[in-house]
Amino acid sequence: MKNVCVITGGGSGMGFAAAKLAGKDHYIIISGRNVEKLQSAIDELKAEGIEAEAFACDVSDFESVTRLAERAAEVGKIDAVIHSAGLSPHMGEAQKIMEVNALGTINVNEVFSAKMGKGTCILDVASTSAYMLPDEALPVSNYELSFTDKEQFIKKMVDAVKHFPEHMHSSMAYPISKNFVIWYAKKCAALYGDKGIRVVSVSPGNIETPMGKLESEEGDKFTKCCAIKRFGYAEEVAYLLTSCIDKRNGFLTGTDILCDGGLVSGMKSMKK
Ligand SMILES: NC(=O)c1ccc[n+]([C@@H]2O[C@H](COP(=O)([O-])OP(=O)(O)OC[C@H]3O[C@@H](n4cnc5c(N)ncnc54)[C@H](OP(=O)(O)O)[C@@H]3O)[C@@H](O)[C@H]2O)c1
Image (tube, rainbow, N blue to C red; front, top):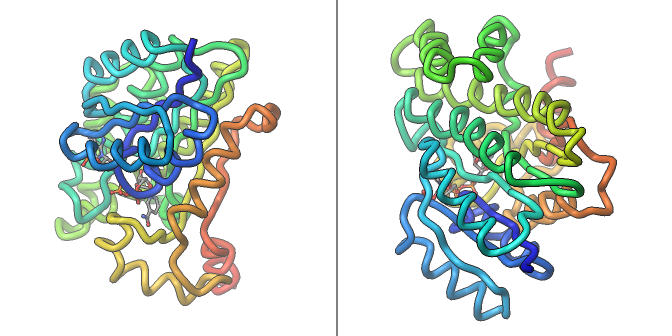
């Protein structure tokens, strides 16, 4: 029976860096929308002696996530899920960002938790941007809808973004979707606790990945507020992600961990 770690968005950036670490003691399934794109990542993992396969999955599509989970359960025991797939402001429109980041997290947690048991962990990747908005900008009162009516939930989330000028829609959808990820991971931790599944979220700051480079203009401005005045490396976050899923962290659940070089604390002290 293989000890499986599924990594959404595992073909690049932090997900790929995490695959290299988690692959030391797991069979790795990396997923993304396009298997061909994942192939070079698989080649690199195999060259390092890691047992791995690629599986096409769009996290915003419930059926697609179900197929990924079925494949993982067929291969072995699902020990951990690192849900790193996401879209940043320059990667799509507000609706798409909400569907991938918010609905994608609901789909992943819901589908995988049904197939996981005692001593396992789901790790949802959020973002420091989730901490940057004033409370008034966050549609928190709609978050609970994620458990009862996903369609209505996404509609309300996108409507919340529409309160801002059009040119800001994508850049607001991103932090709002990630604020939801943190909230949702905490809720799931409470819900799945009895089954022995831990749920943790990690909020990276600006990290040197394909996404981080695409958003670097904004990221460069934030770097000035960090205690460590540079972008983080994918490997640094990957180390945290894989530590969180490690069984020795058996008491870690229901919390968000910032890995941002001191960005959020730096921003807060500037406001005083
Ligand atoms: N880099 C940063 O500065 C930063 C900061 C804070 C948070 N984050 C978060 O960290 C996570 C990892 O990002 P990264 O920086 O490592 O960037 P990345 O290299 O662009 O990784 C994102 C991955 O998500 C996958 N993806 C996108 N849409 C998908 C979908 N609908 N279904 C399945 N997979 C999808 C992409 O693969 P395909 O194109 O093959 O689908 C890609 O491999 C994201 O959730 C991001 O929001 C990043």
